Length: 358
Image (cartoon, rainbow, N blue to C red):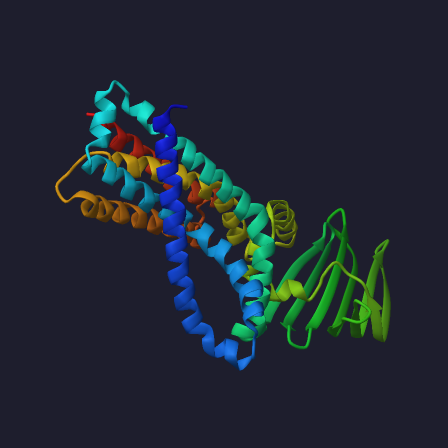
């Protein structure tokens, strides 16, 4: 690598981390002012607030908006180089525009790889601590009261509940059906089933079991029975945010489990999975767009470049939201919905780069 490459790399990474630190500091100040009453109400120590909450909040927020920070950073220092006629001098020295792009691409790949590792392996356990802190001190505990629940808990075993109260951990009109080669072989019906958290079993109350053998029915009735099934009460209170606590492999395993159960949140989980792969590429795409916009000296200077850049960045974010909304509310494939913005903005970056070279 030449001295110029190191110069641009240092400018790129230096401006990015400075911008990131500055914005994070501002965000934390506003966040503290918003939550100060909750901190005081629970008499939390500064150590608890910093290490249990903000040490886990910072990587989450920083990674979430890292492509935008990268975009602003590249526009800022590249525009400054253009206004100081550095870009013109570099290109007039015989260096091609594509060669000029190399350090930008290298830096964006480094940051994109870091974003991938953070989003898939480092931030999920950090999110678990942050969400636990928020549930304990910053918001009410989550309860659900679901109705007409159908869940496949094993390949040939299904559960039905007319309703479920997560606060009391009780499922009403509780039914278990077992099949063999698509043929019903056993059916348990009960008034209600309550989870025993001490013994980790479900207590089935006022039940009737029908077993179907050779066109005969064997009926058993009872007042109470303890049973172990592949279902935990936490399944009913899992919110979308809790998927953020799973690393990449855990998320894949969870999605397979939810596919078997026919979860209504399955599409959202698949979107989260594909976002974690597609998201780091946005760092590279937005870097290319930023260089294409800011490398030409125009009237208005840095301010004009930033204005144009921020409009493009926010349309990119808006388009991502629209496409994922279509996936949730229509039949658009989750993978396609996540990758469409990247594909379109790659084309935009190539068009802008072609114009920048002329």
